[in-house]
Amino acid sequence: MDIFLQQIINGLTTGSVYAIVALGYTMVYGVIQLINFAHGEVVMIGAMVAFTVITALVGAGLPLPPIVLVFAGVLTAVPVCMAIGYLLERVAYRPLRHAPRLAPLITAIGMSIILQHLALLIWGRDPRAFPQIMEVTSFNLGGAAISSVQIVIILLSVVMMGVLTWFVYRTRFGIAIRASAEDVRVAALMGVDANRVIAATFIIGAAMGAVAGVMYGTYYGIAHYTMGFTLGLKAFSAAVLGGIGNLAGAMLGGILLGLVEALGAGYIGDLTDLCQWPVFGGLLAERCEADGHVILLGSNYQDVFAFLVLILVLVFRPSGLLGERVAERA
Amino acid sequence: MLATALLEALNLEVHYGGIAAVKGISFAVEEGELVCLIGANGAGKTSTLKALARMIPAQGEIHYRNARLDRLPSHDLIRHGLALVPEGRGIFARLTVTENLAMGAYHRNDKAEIALDLQHIYEMLPRLKERAAQVAGTLSGGEQQMLAIGRALMGRPQLLLLDEPSMGLAPLMVEKVFEVIRTVAAQGVTIFLVEQNARLALQTCSRGYVMESGLITLADSAANLLADPRVRTAYLGE
Ligand SMILES: Nc1ncnc2c1ncn2[C@@H]1O[C@H](COP(=O)(O)OP(=O)(O)O)[C@@H](O)[C@H]1O
Ligand SMILES: [Mg+2]
Image (cartoon, rainbow over all chains, first blue to last red; front, side, top):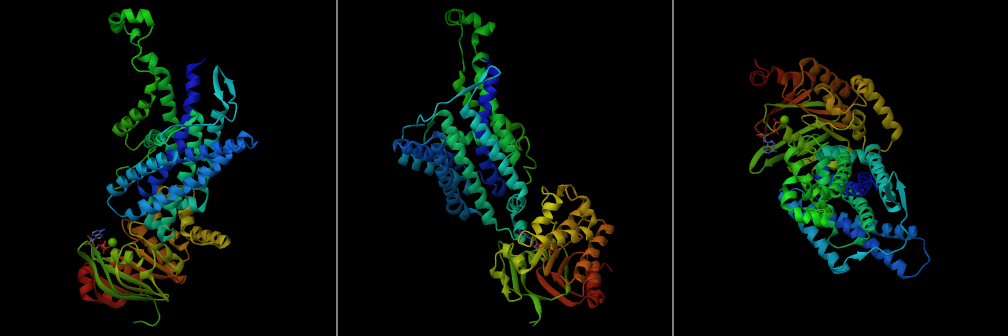
């Protein structure tokens, strides 16, 4: 099996999900310069709602094809998350629109904790397993395996990114969102209601987040009330990597982060195999002979890469790959 | 109170924290007029315009036709026919020229008429047409000012507020911008023009107000103001 190609495929899959979630962070940030830390939880709730619906439908014993089941799950999760996204903005952030920036930021963290505990109350402490409703088929692609789920995730993400790009660049309201991201007060002079634009960024981000949650849960076959935390933080890292506030940056950052993470996970074991280094080889000769490897950091360290990337970007290029003029905004 | 006034401000006040920038001024603009407000840097001119456009909190009454602007949110004003070209132009630098102009017509739904207006703007400001697909941030200062005015006109305003359109422009460009302003006024748009360039402003307007430290200290016809010794020493450098 070609490890490199395999990890590229895996990285593109998770990267697509990161990109979709990152868009939710970056759209909101672009207009109101708020890091909506609760976005990860919205994604988690999307996965939970969909899992619940699918499990219920399977339990009801209706002879529905798998695609219909998943579709029903997504179609329920999306409006639920849109409503939560809207309520977050309306109830938690809007009253603080003109408060010092620390206030909404702390509120965002608070909202994240509240939503997480709400999910804990509703769905409990145990992970939810995705019901076995379909056979996952695998295809051979140049020596690596790509599953039907991976293909669907990548294609669906590309479609969502395409639709969002079209919306933001080709429709009147989309242009108004971009104008508001530059200057809300001047956009208002043209008749743009800032509240509507801001609410729209939350709602659109939440809708995509819901789909991302379902994709992520389906990919790993599991959903848990804490999954939004790591996923959210990774997607946020992706948004920063691409340049927060920048849509293309969020897409690029998400994909890159997925790739870095997958390749890192694929090779970190080999790279930190102490037996290959003469220094350690001598010291650990016995164990190396017995086990063949003494691996310092296994692939379970893959989560580290996202945050390593975040730290490196913040240190060396805080404006991100495609970002500009970060210092300009007070 | 002027019976025919299109816009009338009464006891307008603007405070920043505890500091008063506009200290209870009253003025009026009649339909079809080109009125200017001149004054030194820091006099409170921009604050006055921002108050009229509801961009900052202010006290006092703002009457506009039968509406009370001081009770409307900023984004409703263009529907009442009021547009502001803000200080520093306020163009959307990352949007293309066409997108900026489209934003000007955001509140309108008459697609065919919008297309016609766009054509007229491009005829009046051919430089913009050449750069239609360009991102507005790449335009020169003068072109950006033209774009800001063109964008405001795309909203079909009845009253156009202009905040220092000559700011930061080379003299030749200033001339061109003022030519556009005169053309727009000749088309029947009422204009309230704020300027530091007092001579040019008074030569362009029919009436003027002089603002000093948050108060209107003189109000007269442009010709009288140009001849007024106080204006001549303070604002015309004579
Ligand atoms: N955002 C603000 N915060 C505090 N003070 C301000 C602000 N904007 C303007 N000022 C002050 O208000 C006064 C009037 O400013 P402004 O309206 O910009 O005058 P002008 O346009 O005539 O130059 C000045 O003293 C200025 O320093
Ligand atoms: Mg000013």
